[in-house]
Amino acid sequence: MEETKNKAFPKDFLWGAAISSYQAEGGNRFSDWWAWEMSEKRMAQLQKNGKNPEEFRSGKASEFRNLFEQDLQIAKDLKHNAFRLSIEWARIEPEPGKLNYKELEYYHKVLSSARSKGMKTFLTLHHFTLPEWFAEKKGFVYHKNIPDFTNFSKLVAEKLGHLVDFWITFNEPEVYAQLSYLLGRWPPARANWTDFISVRKNLVAAHRIAYAEIKQVLPQAQIGFAKHAIYFETARWNLVGRIFKFVADTWWNKSFVIKNLDRLDFIGVNYYFHKKFTWRLVDPPVERYSDMRWPLSPEGFYGVLSEMKNYDKPIYVTEHGLADAADRDRSWYIRSSLEQLLKAREKGVDVRGYLHWSLLDNFEWDNGFDPRFGLVEVDYRTYERKVRQSAKDFAKIIEQGYLI
Image (cartoon, rainbow, N blue to C red; front, side, top):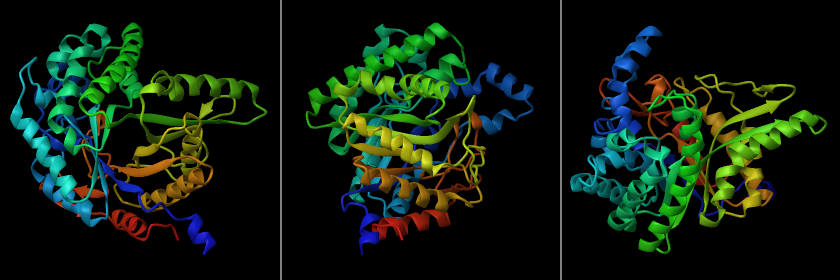
């Protein structure tokens, strides 16, 4: 009995999965990502690397746009009581100051559908994409542009706030800044150190202002952001490693949180990576890898969650998953990671929910359609859905409320 109790989840624990609307909906022609996918520069880059540009264009993505009722019913059948999605700013405001109320109605339908199926909703305001017009004036590079985003945030709160349980202002702000402005892999695909630093700084300011704007409309709103957290590990005796861990944790894991700690009602944790420092930074030794060759380390999940305890904030796992087309390791990875989550809870970490990435196979940004992260398989020719065995195994854990 005691062993079962130690492996039990709270009755009000939130279970579910997440999507990014751009990756799942398709057809967002007013987005900076869409423009980049169609650009001659991107086409030439892919052709130079021997790749077919058509395979790296979002197109219809997963067709969630037209199949959301079916997809949310699948989530309900899989026992999910929470759902995370993003809202595409480029759809709502395709031109500066010009609102598309049909698109607001579309998101109203999606959120209402999730609510009607007994799911708490997590809504992300920025999941890497921008309206093309906002990107053309350099987006978050300039502080003067922040009001465009915060006005959008307030608008969404006014129009859809009654359907939202948890607000996520930014998804992985450090990842967005790094891949878009430091490494130049994502649009605007310009590697510029000065712009990178400006974007990091302005995303902090944008979160703080958006938090205040949403609270004006919805004083009881629960607002946070989704933090891409990496577990950096080193031996106690390794002084160089300990210095590296301190610097890496401060720069990557702590900076954005600490600067916003007074404007966070919860912290969303996205976990994918565990890094170890011996005399250089390496992946930890593991037995299994995802299709993207990311090492699968449930132990790093415990490390990340444990380090969040110091912030004294509720924690929701807003993303956690793997690319696994054959569905070989997903069940094992979910269960092993949930064991680590329970271990963190036993140590006093206030983890209140787990959202798997992703509900559906989807368009995986600059990696195209090859990576398969979904609990639900998508046939991109017919858009037929097929529930993977791992999704059924996950549903059993949710239904019983404990690990056996």
